Image 1 (cartoon, rainbow, N blue to C red):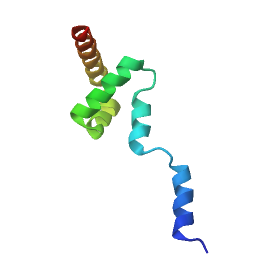
Image 2: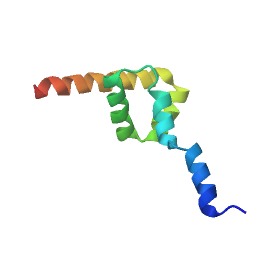
Image 3: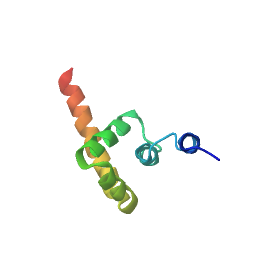
Length: 81
């Protein structure tokens, strides 16, 4: 008879990464470092669920938002120097 701890340990091994991590990895495939930072900024601004919805239903708008945030990050970086 297995105990609660044994069941939870086995399920935790299978689920090493949270759903948010999996979704972030799914959305950031093929992106460079600054685009990943822009994706993080977008998620902070609009929440993960909304960003994931746009990523799956409207890829063009998703890419435009990432480009917009990349431009913002580059401009912000240029002002700091």
